[in-house]
Length: 208
Image 1 (spheres, rainbow, N blue to C red):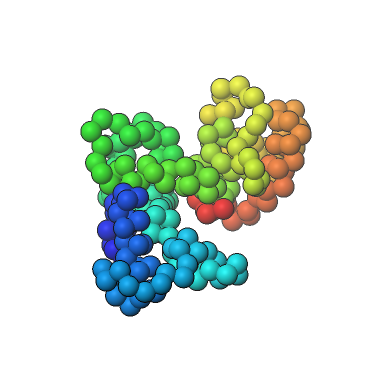
Image 2 (spheres, helix red, strand yellow):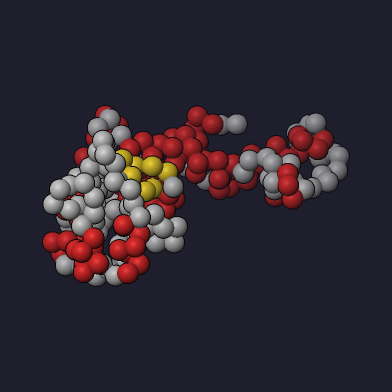
């Protein structure tokens, strides 16, 4: 398994298929290239879950995306690391990873990291602590499976404000009155159900 390469590069689907064909042939015949033996099941059957009659083998393309996703997750959760700072300076100096585009003359590694951008965007959530590092309209911070973003059409100031601006005057909980006057019933209910930490750690990313 070319695991190291798949942690860095997005392998072409044709290459993954060729490797899987060789693995399938060796699994059923014990040899490669002889053309002998019977292949009782296709590779798709072998990669199916054991619960549905498969063998639970890993799809190389999906494994490739999972390994690249781990690298992209580091860009999101460790923005001060050297590699994250280099990629941000080169490809998304004025935005975040989830808003980044391919840009001009992108490296092969960056193209692979962009391939898992949608997966990272769908799986990332913000855990609210002190509320200073999470922006109301830009981050996925609502505890909802279908739509973790605020759906209320708010003004630009509210859209770009930190979540901490929604705390009450004592800074001990949510400003309920403002919440119900600014947000629709759906958003207000979800926000009010988010517990406020007494110790107030910094906001952080977590995998939903």
